[in-house]
Amino acid sequence: MNELTLIAGIATALGLGAMSPGPSFILVARTAVTASRMDGIAAAAGMGIGGVLFAAIALLGLHVVLTNVPWLYMVLKAAGGAYLIYLGYRIWRGAAQPLALGQDDAPRQRRQLGKSFSLGLVTQLSNPKTAIVYASVFTAFLPPSFSLMLALVLALVVFVIEAGWYAVVAIALSSQRPRAWYLRYKAWIDRAAGGVMAALGGKLIWSARSL
Image (cartoon, rainbow, N blue to C red):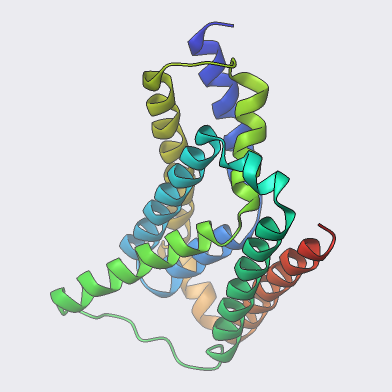
């Protein structure tokens, strides 16, 4: 298998995985609608960086440690699940609060973009299972030894897939009609999003118990 075919196969597998619904999608979608398009894109960039970190972990072989030291993997999954539950609780708690729009203060906007980026990054890193998924895909396609250049190209591919997909989500959901629809049904949408986020966190914690 030549390197171009190999990269295309990995990109296809990871792209399909990125498009599957989950806490990352909920976070970026809600950020884009409640804050701004740029905040959604900042969160998407955080998702991309988180994906690159997980890809690096997988390429370095840390997934072997996680799968052979069950208690460490269990702790990481439980911690990630607890974070998602906390995030879901915050979304649920703020469901009835009115949404503040139209901030023009540039320093405040920069701080908000940084916060959105950090939230995207931490949410991506809250699920260590992603590192195992990357490792499984890499194991299926990569030869036992590969060049540093290929590893760097794969890291770039991961960033483009993760950040690119969620940027598309942010752009699509920050347009006028989705935002107007969200503002109309904010309380119900936030409660549903918070409940789903907490449920995903609970599922992550529950899966840790079976390790």
